[in-house]
Image 1: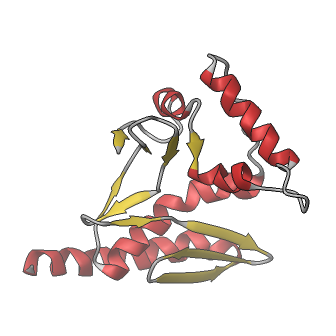
Image 2: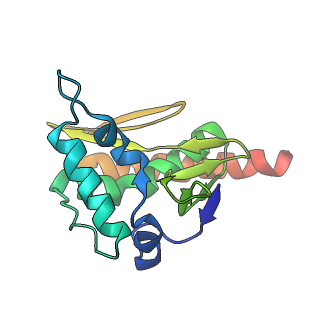
Length: 165
């Protein structure tokens, strides 16, 4: 496994992903029709990866409002996870197989052998922050203030706990 230590979303990170079948799109590369033939999503993704491997650029990625909210709230969810579980996480870039055919970019590494994928789903009047050992729901516009207040209180508790270790 090769670890490309670049900030997620940076030009270097995007370059490391170029021409690599990624974990987030692995479902597409395996999708088949009922007759066993590759699906349109599978073929489109195969063409994208082939184009990138031949020196082309990846198509622009669409990001809707919900996805932007997820990116904006991820740091809050990670901090909450850390203080509630006592596990410290490490931000990571992109991992590829030695042959650079396949890769993935988890949100964080946990200790020596774990990964954290943060899922943030916003519905009507609520927000759900999810990850291993973590579920947190809040209502409406109070999400940020409630998260910050709980995070600050739990951070102090976690710091004290870490000092005792």
